[in-house]
Length: 201
Image 1 (cartoon, rainbow, N blue to C red):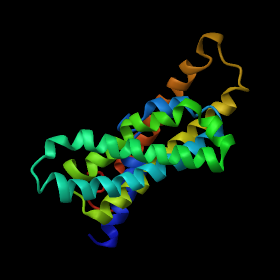
Image 2: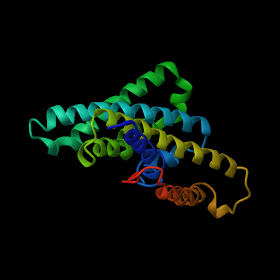
Image 3: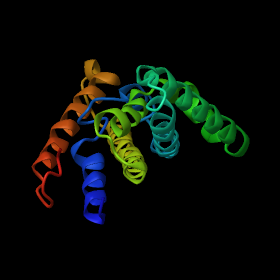
Image 4: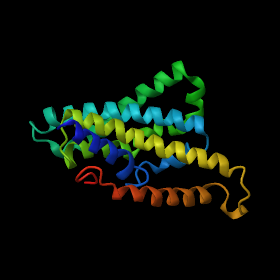
């Protein structure tokens, strides 16, 4: 794949096929950690790391273990085990080097293990799109960037909403759901991008 193809994958992963706002995956940490900008950034960095490394490991395991030994049907279990191991690593590193961020993320850090966006990018790289190794890494990084972008935008909006005069019945999650819906509609506009041919699919 040439450089233009990698740009296509990058733009599609961040804007057009954003895992949160277009594919609606990873909504649990999206709503849970988007109350504060600082914790949103920390979660975003953790997700980028896990998505990138998971993309590398799952691609290698899929191509060199599952396919040759004809056990492709085990990919879901294997991918989840890889992701769970990576999350444990991130959790130990944060607990040692950034206890404040570790406490801020709380229960949502282990929830990365069950974050379907990370499993989704691993499946997309191998089973659905059949990307090569470099394409898988680029898609993993940029999907994480897209997740972080959505998370940070949502956190910024929710911090402002705390100061806004909104009806009592809409405070908290209800206004967050409405905001997320409006963001998804806004991101839907990126589907019309035609800087490159076939960028959306």
